[in-house]
Length: 98
Image (cartoon, rainbow, N blue to C red):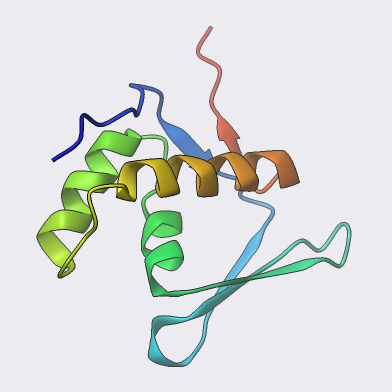
């Protein structure tokens, strides 16, 4: 297995974003401020549910490997890219501890 490239940061979902689960574990994110929506497959929905500020991306990957079959070695890279996309859209971020 490849060395995982994730950090110890704990991403958190933007509480203003509406998460709606649809059929077969697919989901939709909706930003009420912009009216934009974002469709998510079951893996993306799994990740979203773990963006609680308590789990690092490494933690989420460990949980994913426990719960899902055939998780590819490059899953860490895909997860990091996905979370970065959520952050760029304002759907997630990192809590600032002062």
